[in-house]
Length: 233
Figure (cartoon, one colour):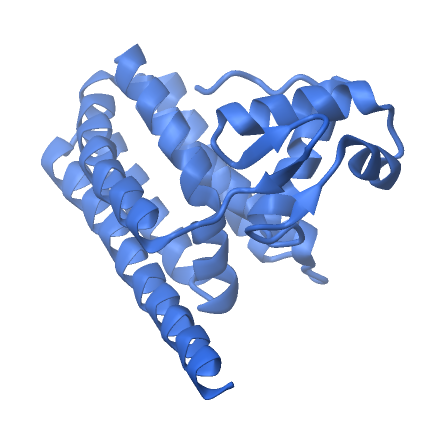
């Protein structure tokens, strides 16, 4: 399993700023300062500074304290590279997890799938419920990698997933792929729990590849439209 999140102020601030980036509240290229974020989050500048340093290591922001920070731009080349590597690593990690999973691990994965279903069934589902479902879905892949037992592989997947969250949020929100994603996650977990490593690995690769293709079409459409607006203006 991924490390448990600590309910400290610094972790809370980090998660809050990261959520703003992933969900587009702070869009690519947006500039920000420690003072502005501290005022917005009603905290001192110290946990904000620590959060920005962590997000810079995550490759989600760039900049320095005195000059200010900016949300890192998401381009097609970085997107393609991240998802190509993720497809390979996720498939292999899923096969490893299938071979090494315990009863406790199976219960953990099934509980995460059930949590996504619970969040989806919320009577007055809001953006916070959707972000929580996104986070549980992303964490499902982290847990699978951890169960696989290869620490280097798990670390690589965690870093790539940090880069992919913004894209996955766009796919789920704009293309309304929530139901399909839950179905695919359930199928992957079922195959892992059944001990079918080949099927589990194939499903994981198919899941990442399908997400990549959906987001790529969306990004290419947006890029083409933006170029059209520039040409027409």
